[in-house]
Amino acid sequence: MKPPPFAYHAPATVGEALDDLAGLGDEGKVLAGGQSLIPLLNMRLAAPAALVDINGVAGLDRIDVAAAVTVAATARHTALERHARALAACPLLGQALRHVAHPVVRNRGTVCGSIAHADPAGELTAVLAVLDGTVRVERAGAAPREIAADEFFVAPLESVLTPGDLVTAVSFPRMHPQAGSAFVEIARRHGDYALCGIAAVVDLDGQGAVSAARVGAISIHPTPLVVDCGEVLTGRPPDDADALRAAGELVDAASAPGGDLHADVAYRRQLTRVLTARALSAAADHARTRTQEAA
Amino acid sequence: MSARVPADQELDLTLRVNGTARQVRVPARRLLSDALRHDLELTGTHVGCEHGVCGCCTVLLDGEPVRSCLMFAVSVRDHEVTTVEGLTPDGGDLHPIQRAFQECHGLQCGFCTPGFLMSVTGMLAGNPTPDRDEIVEGISGNLCRCTGYQNIIAAVERAVELSAAVDGDGMSRADAGERAPGRTRPPTPYGAAGPQVPGTARDGTAEERPS
Image (cartoon, rainbow over all chains, first blue to last red; front, top):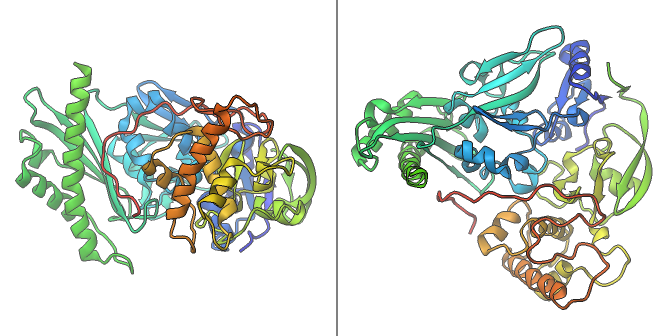
């Protein structure tokens, strides 16, 4: 249970980090919060020849709030959780972060790391996907790229990142001021990997009927799954049980869950249908609250 | 290219632990938990699972609780580490949180206790008057196989009372870590500035909690 030996690089700037990663190729791995990587090293499930520790890179812990909430590479989950303006711009972030592991892990883990790790059970992957967020990727000798979430995630624990790439920031677009959101999940223990998790974003029209509804799901698909539920919910009151049930079936039909010891496929499908309805309903309540607060 | 340390080479590091600068010579792969226990002989920090699940190895990094088994010693060079030994830096009276655990029988075998103490220290620093749900959330990353948690929760509630009483009687306590009510994020025990105050309200969505 000790990490295998690795060469250690401690760049002071993004440029140095990119040069290190370019020189190392597929032998190099980025160390940010380490809350997913170091367990893998301790259990010898990963043995990179070199680690590039970006924790000492100045200015990489920024969180900026403009048209989007942009979180740089070493900003911790806790820093975002405490950033009032970021959570006001994008309440779904706060709702989801509470489900990310435990407070002590969130003190060290990074938002960008959660995205780059591309774990299909990672709450923030669904948040990024359902909000149409982007990932900023840099590499030595190339212009920075902004990659859309729906292109970024490829497979479980696999993204479009290639050796030499560094995720320098992720951007979560600001939610519409009257949109509501919710994140619900079922895990065997609070903070454990979700058996199924649903992020929902709902817009209501002036009469209180649904005008837009989207769902992002984790743990039921190889990548974070986004489903537009507008076709069954638009124009309906948000407490319409038939419409909510139809939305659950829509997400279920789009998903490809795998079964394991803790939850077989049928159970995950059941969770998908139930949690989708719950999340959409809670998001609609949240939308009403936000609309009233804005008025 | 940045400074590079080959895999087989040891580094000379200065670690600031419990207010003291300590020298260690370790390879880059040395976990902080092992550096504390084996290199600095601070064996109060316990190692249970070594992959971030049990919480026994929790220490404070600049006042925030973190898993020392999920960090490398080399990564904390410019930071302040506080271990359970640092709760009573002068070897004097027990810290109020330790007294509360003793009074409320918040420990049996004691293996998990240092981790709980550090997690609770961090939690009460950010929120001096947590409600029961917040306490359960705050200790959710620490496992205890003996107590069934009820006495630990009671101990945290007692620690809140003790800390308030100690601060309220007008005596200024020199040992750091005492929390004044109303201060949401005091300095860390050895003076490094704590992080920013949580200013955000929780949203109203329902959440499953461990019973």
